[in-house]
Structures are given as structure tokens and as C-alpha cells.
Length: 332
Ligand SMILES: [Zn+2]
Image (tube, rainbow, N blue to C red; front, side, top):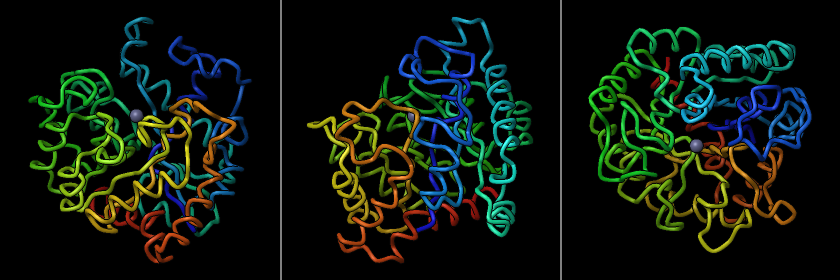
């Protein structure tokens, strides 16, 4: 089952591992110098092959607090992480292509190569429309508008669900959609997601969020917004972050992930579902018990979906076709 995963922090993890360490990244401390070809993280080229990956969205997570501490602008941190991403992909260009469109994805696929998209988690590296244009020119194809800090773009779910986009955020969402960049509303407040949905002329994504009705975490989506994103033609990347899966357990269970998929399917249909695992962006709390440890475990999820009554046509949609549809509508 071909897979497109919408959200992984692997390149940011490699960036900090290979030098630019921050205290917030303590869980990475025990890893050796590593690269994309093979590493101890949840994603490398070997594991992507095992997952039957078609494309991976590599997120550059920009930690504003870290920027402040090291007196680096978010834009400069973006540029540093971006060039590391290009170097990592270049160093295994026989196996993976840096892609920015469906057409380039098709070329990579025809060459039997993996494909990697670049995206940014934390929109505050953009202060002007010129910078947004520059990020697009460099190949950034989605931006998660906010992370867990309030910025000039808007308010995250971690701070206040009742305040949403700010004036610059409105301008940015419109400009992103005009350029052909996906707008990612994961981390945004409920009000902010409503603001984006009202404004959106093209499908949007929630790259890594689950159903709040099943797990009452601010990062998960309430029913109204799940339906809203479905009506917008967008997708929601379900994930196995323990805090977003289950309030009553730290263990990552495949069955629990299937319950989120089933819930969203019952509520909003099969076209809104996608995978956005957030690999290498969260800490496993019970590593010895977790049923999903790396991206190579995703085929197990497809097996259980099949046994749970989903057809292979539906699983194809969840695993990659819905994302291809959104890419066709929003970035090409
Ligand atoms: Zn995140």
C-alpha cells in the first residue's frame, strides 16, 4: 500500500543531532551523528522503503524560544535547516528526490525513487510577503501556520481556542493559496481553523491531528472542524502521538489509531483521511510496548484496517490518494 506521510520532524532531529543542539531536544541526546540514509530515528531511507513510501513531507520545526535563546532570527534558522535538508537529500539523490509538485513526484516515482517535500512548522519565520515568496521559491510546499506560541500570524490551540488568525495571518493564508502552498492548521486554535476555513479558496490540511471526541486534547479536532475540513476538500493526517491518541493510556496501539480513523470516517467520510504521523517529533512513553515505532510499521496499520472492514480502495485513499488529490488542487 503506497504511503504519503504528511508530517515528520526527522530533518529537524538530524539538524540538532549533527550539531545545533538545543536543550528542548533532550530526547535526542543519546543518538550518534546520523544521516537520512540510515539512522536510529523513526524515518530513514531503509524504513521508508519498508513502508512502501511514495512521498514523505519533511517538516522543518522552528523553535522560537530556541531562536531567542541563541539570538538567531526564525528566518535564519529556517535557511540553516533548509540547506541541511537539501544536503541530506542530495547525499542520497540516487534513492530520493527533492520534489515540489505532483509532476516532480511522478518523475521520481517513474525512476523508482522516493520523494521528499519540504515544509515548515511555525509560520512566524515569515514577516513579509517577500519572504513568503522566497520560501515558495525554495520549494516549501506547506507551512503549519502556528506552533505552540502566539505570533503575529495567530493563536495556537495550546493558548486560547477562542482567538484565531490575526491581520497578517489572513494576508498570509490568502497569499499561500495564491502561490500554491498548502495551509496547515494543526496546532492552530479552533477559532483560527474556522477563520482559515472561511477564507480558504483551496483545500487545506491538518497535517497531524486526531479526533477530540475520542481523546480530549487541545491539539485534536472537534467534530465541527473535522466536518469543516471535509467540506473544504482538505485532509486530516491521523497520527500515533500518545497524548493525541488516548487520554487513558501512554501505549501506542494500532487499534486505537484505527478507532480515530473509523470515527473521522463515520463523521466526515473517506475523502478527508490521511496519515501524518509526527515521527521524530514526539517521545515514545512506553517504547517496549508501542505497536508503532517507526514508519516501517505503517503497513501493519493497513493490515488491521483491512481486517476492520475498510476496502483496499479506501485504504489507498487514506494512505496516499487523498493527499495526491489535495496536492493537485492546491499546489499545482
Ligand atoms: Zn507539531
